[in-house]
Image (cartoon, rainbow, N blue to C red; front, side, top):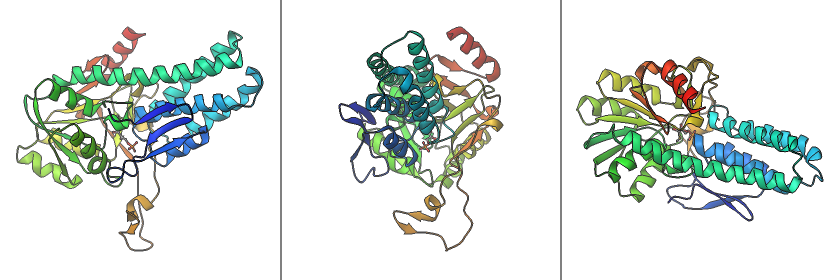
Length: 349
Ligand code: MRU
């Protein structure tokens, strides 16, 4: 399995996703500040992966504290959480993981746990999130596989694979599961400008699994759809609002509109940690604006003239009306999402 991130006795080890596919190298974060930088610089990326990375960052911060008592550690705990929360604004999994750690810490203070017990329980919680994420990917993979054709091509955008999770993937988990069931699936991977998660990461991990994959430029999907060469679209998500509006990598919205126009089903696969019931619609989802250099340069080479204006939103919002189904580890949800999401939230809690 692709080792996206792993806890080690010396810190948290990440495969460096900025270097793939040309170089398979690893970065060891030995402090929570280094984990924050690893998230900001996209060494690790993908909503579920950054959530669990933040959880391990908090565990690392707790392990390294020089505070002598839980109450002396409390302000440091808050500062660690605040630093990690400031890394990337769109994927709600980050805030979900940090909130879960905050609730645990408050309960441990309430129980009068010792600092040693707090360190152990925080690390155990991070491990639990890691394992739950893989299990959720496997379950949503099994649910989603049934939606894919027995034989046909599936388009995906960005990387919602093992590299974006703790393993197996969300959208790519659905594809993997279909292939494991014997379905003959060909994957079209949008290259996903400007960071090229599709061309670099999705292509790399699907090839490692021998799943037939073709990379296309982001502007090619319409023509392939019109030619009948794509039978379904599956993407991941960074945040799903209470009405089903879905934030995902910039360009996802384009693909959703194209799919609707061509009568092709458009599926979103995401764990429940990506559902943000507290955010009413996609309009309220914060969209990260990343540095202009990601657009002006590639591989250290300048592509655009000096001084030209640059716009680089990292995500867009696909309105719920374009989404055929949302695949989660709790089941496959259909429109109207405001109702199906609320019902599933109530059933599970
Ligand atoms: O900017 P990134 O690479 O973190 O964006 C990732 C995506 O948009 C993924 O599709 C999303 O996080 C789902 S990952 C299972």
